[in-house]
Image (cartoon, rainbow, N blue to C red; front, side, top):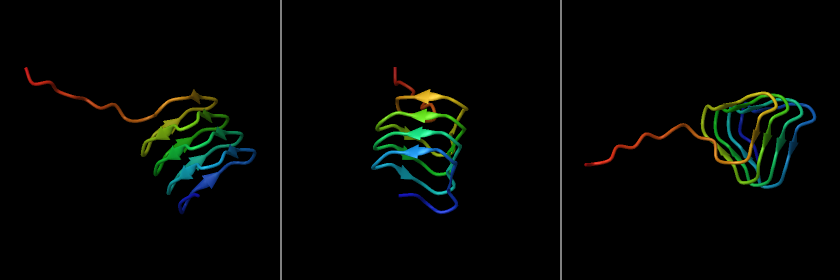
Length: 82
């Protein structure tokens, strides 16, 4: 399943149960494994590999030949009441 204005590069392998949202760009020769979510406007550069069950949050960029096997999201800052 993929959204509108999405580009998938040549020789990229996308496994089963992967959701690719709108405006996502996946480069050439990438590997997106099972049950991943690529949220809107993310960019995955050439040769990157995303591990199973990973979620890539909105607007993130994954560099060339990167290997990620966990959740990818923007940092969350929490404050504690003292």
